[in-house]
Length: 84
Image (cartoon, rainbow, N blue to C red; front, side):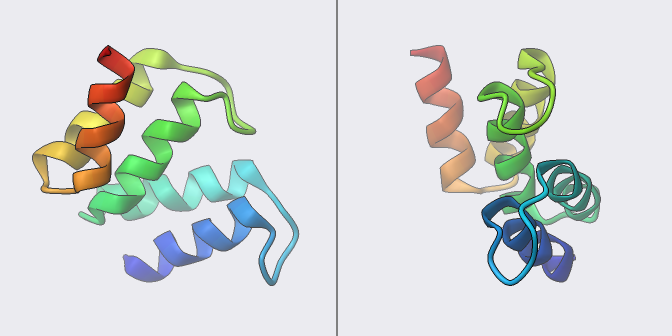
């Protein structure tokens, strides 16, 4: 699943491929479902910041909570910052 997460990062940044946030979100969601906690965090941030995909606060918080519960420090930080 790390491969999906890495490819998602490439699509989100346009590094080595065209920038495509919808594709990045799709790959992050697949990786998150497969247990890649950092992909959950990235997807959560995308939903909260309306980063190329539809803003969905509840979905974003759910993905950040899943990342945090899995031990992704960034997910915990992003979740705390949102609640702050």
